[in-house]
Image (cartoon, rainbow, N blue to C red; front, side, top):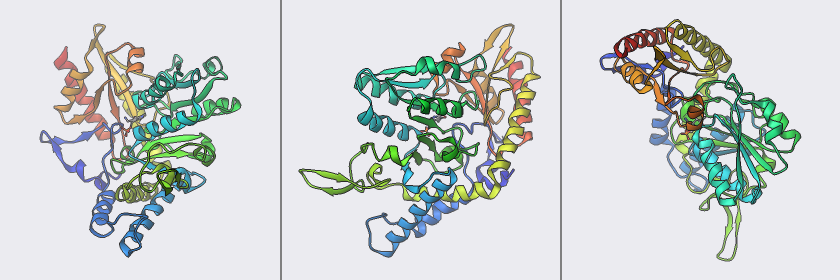
Amino acid sequence: MRREDFPILEDKVYGKRLVYLDNAATTQRPRALIETLTDAYYHHNANIHRGVHHLSQDATQRHEEARQKVADFINARSAKEIIFTKGTTDSLNMLAFSFGEAFVKEGDEVVVSQLEHHSNIVPWQMLCERKKAKLKVLPLDKNLLIDTTQLNNILTNRTRIVSIAQVSNVLGTIQPVEDIIRLCHQHHIPVCIDGAQSTPHLNVDMQSLDCDFFVFSAHKMYGPTGLGVLYGKQEWLDQLPPAEGGGEMIEHVSFEKTTYNTLPYKFEAGTPDFISSCALAATIDYINGIGRADIYDYEQELTSYLEKQLSTIEGVKVYAQGKEKAGAVSFNVYHNGQLLHPFDVGTLLDHQGVAVRTGHHCAEPLIDYLGVPGTVRASVAMYNTQEDLDILITALKRAIEMLI
Ligand code: PMP
């Protein structure tokens, strides 16, 4: 599907076809985005919101149209609910700070799960340390899914927020977030969904998901680096204080008292990345042009094919095998019961032109839980082909031969 739209894929690595299977870390960018970026710097560059002159108004309009496009893409009720940030990490840090200031006190509890990315652990942990609150962890079931049956044991009347990933960046598994959101709402507890790994693969819909906050990064969905989104229901965002002070987030400033701007500007201090927002808009047009349902179906074919091929190789253990996945498949290789170190496997794959990721994938608590030093993760995007996966499998067999 559309490999030719991604110019970098024509490059060679060690003289070989680049087989890029590190999409969960970052995706490659389509020509549509690259051209929009260049065009924006050539023809639409002026600081937004503040200028009366033509170029500033043009840039402002493009930025605000991009916000609306993002709102439509995730089916938010309003563009006011879309806050542009630097990425998922930035969104989660802003939310943990701001929500924490408003709602978390000593003795309160914040809940995450065992499989979270460090970005969805550390900001909450820092908040808990600051406020003397407690970080609680939802366990996993035997299928490596968040164990929803444990929710009622974990939630208490001190739980202030639950923050969980929709798709695990290590395992690729789609988590039962709908059930978790419904159960939390029965207890009037808001839920934040880390959508860094779901937005690139699934049709994420804020109104049907009904989460209270949702965060994602543009660079993992074929968009520009340095840009992300913090979505929040307006009724929540209205209650939260700004996380950062500066230009644009204010209504009036005096030394005695500053009042704050309306949504979403209250949360966007300083000059936003109005070039990247336009590039993200172009990316969304590109994705919509292909169709998210078709992308989903195509990627499903790829991941099941990959799992099937991996399971034909002796000694390969696929994590959460057979469970519904979006994008990533993690595995390890054993020989005579001994683990072949994932770094060694990854390095030998790289030498054959195959880019995968190895290690803890910024999810050390999950890797500790799996009881391994790391995994090898192959993650697909819409431009990968069955041929890419065949090359991976051949390269993996060769790597194993070299290691045993
Ligand atoms: N959460 C998840 C589930 C992720 O996969 C990632 C990126 N690997 C992040 C958060 C952090 O995203 P970023 O580095 O773009 O801020």
